[in-house]
Image 1 (cartoon, one colour):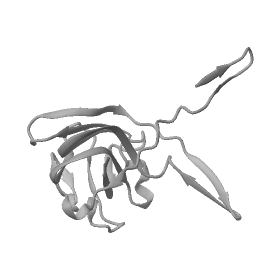
Image 2 (cartoon, helix red, strand yellow; image 1 turned 90 degrees about the vertical axis):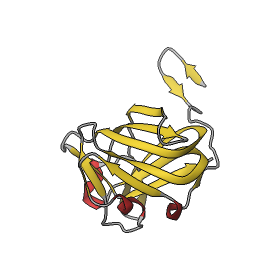
Image 3 (cartoon, rainbow, N blue to C red; image 1 turned 135 degrees about the horizontal axis):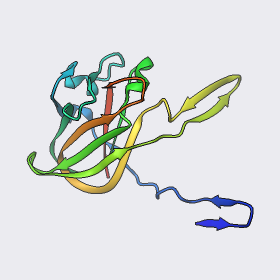
Image 4 (cartoon, one colour; image 1 turned 45 degrees about the vertical axis):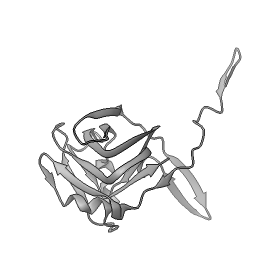
Length: 169
């Protein structure tokens, strides 16, 4: 809903309705990299903060997640290790498939996150801009998720992901 006046425009309740999303167990997933990547694809689900998968932004590098069986999924989330937050993809192609051959695009473009700062005691914390990236979409059946990173922060030419979650609706 949007209210307007001569002097200001105030928007509220513009967030999508909350869904009760549940992260799938990472033990049931297998990940395959394509193109020229560095690191083991399994690093994205090994739970070790310092390990990652990375590649150059040339639209030929990425990864495919095999969920093991078809699920109704509604989103993905990933993060980067420590100082590599600027290497998280902010632009990417995200595609779903039931059979591993025919893919449907659910996200094709840039995803901007606005940072949120807050205080706890005398310490500032930041979330969003330098945190994980999430993409939510209408729930749909899929066994395979293909991601091709297309853009990162302007100061680097490669992407890096160390943690990955897939959300079941």
